Amino acid sequence: MARLPLFGQTGTAASPAKADYMLRIGPATVELDRSHILSTIGYNGSAPGPVLRMREGKPVAVDVINDTDSPEFVHWHGMLIPAELDGTEEEGSPAVPPHGRRRFQLTPGPAGSRWYHSHAMAMDNLHKGSYTGQFGFVYVDGGNDPGQYDQEFFLALRDWEPFFTSVMEDDDDDTHSGPLLEKPTILNTDPDGLEVGSMTYSINDKALGSGEPIRVREGQRLLIHFLNASAIENRRIALAGHKMKVIAMDGNPVPSPQMLDSIFVGAGERIDVVIEMNHPGIWILGSTEKPIRESGLGVIVEYAGQHRHPLWIDPPKSPWDYTIFGTSTSNSPAPQQTIEMIFEKIPRGFGKFNSWLINGKPYPHEGEFALQQGTRYRLVMRNRTDDAHPTHLHRHLWELAEINGKKTSGVLKDTVVVPYYGRVTVDFTADQPGLSLFHCHIQQHMDYGFKALFVTRSS
Ligand SMILES: [Cu+2]
Image (cartoon, rainbow, N blue to C red; front, side):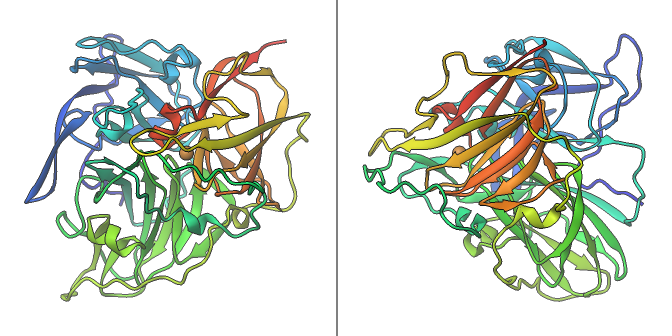
């Protein structure tokens, strides 16, 4: 039996006048625990918003009402939909006006774990865009779910109360398994500017230990859809005492599912895992970083009939490697053209914000990246910075081709973490006419230059 904790879906009754779903952007209260209650902007008064379940290929109408004083953009992350519905200002999608409304009529797809979130620019305002509670899952049912699980959960990883800091502690480092292919011979050692940090975390809307535990029985199989809805950081997650079988990434089934001790989820990414409940006890599922877990990023998993203290065990450390989920033989056509991208950071010093460059320039780029519809491209992303960047291309599916020199194929994603001083190569077909936004999913990096437009013309 499938069960959705914490939130259900909105109405699905279809009539010409009434929308299938309604999202109301406005004030939301998040009770992380009894002593820590936050005010933010969310959907339908909560954060995360409702899990929207849609059927692949079945058109839906979503009414979005904006009760705030600023224009808002609702982006449907991972959906292959026209630019005017995609929900970004850069692609020319109309805003949901302040105290106004807008109807989205879209055909959901492809099947799998998608999500919706604000795509507004935030710049130096930490109460805007993806720093707020404007995020939620969309699950697109494809009609071929074998249902080999007993319970289903949607878990969004979040941080709250962001602040500016010049001392960034991040756990991006473990994305690394390869040589530093893109490390420049001369490093820019100017002092860094401000980055965004947090010390308050949750899974969905609850800090570790304060919400309902995930209640299980021995022998059950859990299907967990993870989403990293953070605007600021990548995360590594484990369930103490258990291994997780990764079956899909960014909602797309992987060719070679893998049994792992922990998973790495970049900002914006989704990972679906199946877990066999074969180790009775009371366990913690959460961040592998102790300070982050103890500041809320976790949830208790409780077997029936067990009564003891929730237990955490550090999983063995192993570098994250996307290529293990792929195959060695590709079924896709060979790319016809190559696009090169070099990512750089200009440190701006104390009290200022760093700038982020693609091919030597911050957004906007003159002429941007021109594509021909139907052509298959190879995109080479060279990260000449000391951060791991979760990059995302709107309205397209990437096939991973190479990670730090290791080849793979068959892994379809819309977001990929490019390791620090590393290189990621992806292939994709320009099958969406019009503008498609490319950017780093760290809100501050995107706002301060780390984005570009792909312009696809039909021949
Ligand atoms: Cu970034």
